[in-house]
Length: 224
Image 1 (tube, one colour):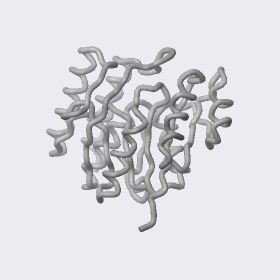
Image 2 (cartoon, one colour):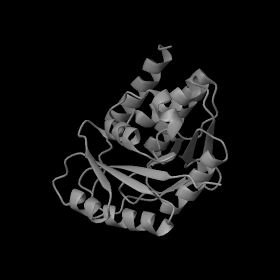
Image 3 (cartoon, helix red, strand yellow):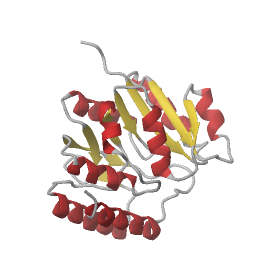
Image 4 (tube, one colour):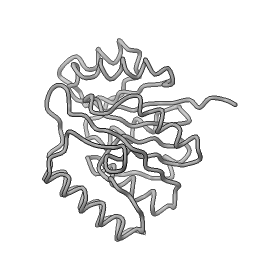
């Protein structure tokens, strides 16, 4: 049986300290065939690091969602995995995400809120917000998601165009979950543990991006 080709897409912005750790861990796995770094015009040596590790480097400064859409479109793997550059996601979990796709699912999503998952990087108010968003999406689209705003996910390459993603910012994960439900794709959640960012400050702004996620939910509610 032919082995699935795996592409990993990583949006970056000033991650020169974190990125080498992430890339070393990915290389050690031995199952990642292509790494695409989509950089938001970093002012540090992020791009130099990416090129040193043999990554394909693309540029996009419109937001995380826009960067992910570009990277996913350009990926050549049978399985496309999205992950962050801040050392919060454990590289070995790609094995589980990949297995979900190979088992027949269209999208395999990491979840911090099912047995075996967890997080050390989410304050109580963000956990509450996530629960509210999960409740609304499950209510409106009849799903049983446990996590909504987490970006560690694997996709069957053939369904990416079908998702027809539009969001430029942090609402991209919510848009993916909703459109997967609307289009009746086969979705699996697997446990994932989110570690704290290792170096630097993240680009997530809780209230601004929480509002964008809420607007994503209600805008999708009124679309066909």
